[in-house]
Length: 253
Ligand SMILES: NC(=O)c1ccc[n+]([C@@H]2O[C@H](COP(=O)([O-])OP(=O)(O)OC[C@H]3O[C@@H](n4cnc5c(N)ncnc54)[C@H](O)[C@@H]3O)[C@@H](O)[C@H]2O)c1
Image (cartoon, rainbow, N blue to C red; front, side, top):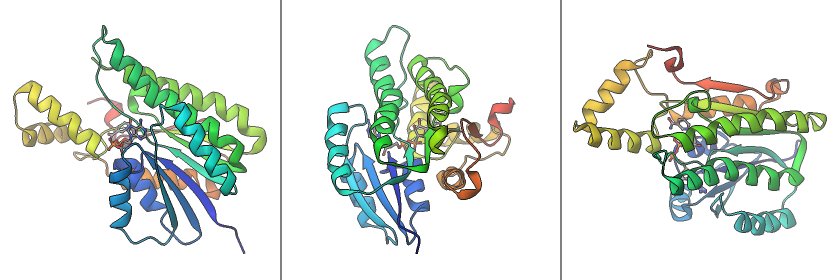
């Protein structure tokens, strides 16, 4: 009989992390879901039928002390972690002079991803999988986004280096580079842009979709499908990669 597969997902209360949790909702899985918004995470979990075992934890991935306490508790109780999905992230814009938002975005997106990964490693099974949500902005720049772009470029570099560190244990480390995924993050970003441009949210949505080659946003469960593939036995030879899912937007328009 095969043993239960343990999957730890950060940022699971909303968006991509939530879709990933849903994708792993099957018998034989145990899900450890982590989010800053514990109340939101618990409400969502309570509203859904679960075939997998599920536990929820409230934690700020930027807070190393809180994470250390959580992992101490997890390691006393858990066996091995088979899959780690780092999806927690924020996309706060920053002007070049804005140090406060620089530090917060780097702390959550880059340090947070590394904190969780580093603390999870002693629990990780040989042959395990680490999947990091970077962004198309891990390959490109964007105005008022020095912090976000730096954090996502950093995640891609970290992914490549860590893949080499962990290859002797057959642990694969890959990054997914999403863009235009229909989540609360994208909706709130577009709402802000609509306000700045003085146009309605409906118009900004229509204009954005018109510019995309597929003429639509990508659904979060399509990203979750890529995560399932990277966690599958068929992807055991895929490591140190950055896989784009952007509906063709990165090709240019
Ligand atoms: N939606 C997109 O189009 C898109 C594009 C590129 C990259 N991404 C990346 O994908 C990941 C998920 O994005 P999303 O669109 O699902 O975002 P979202 O805002 O819809 O969900 C993010 C989740 O992370 C949680 N979170 C935020 N800060 C946290 C912290 N400090 N500690 C713990 N949890 C925290 C939030 O509470 C939320 O539940 C992010 O890393 C984001 O940068 C998304």
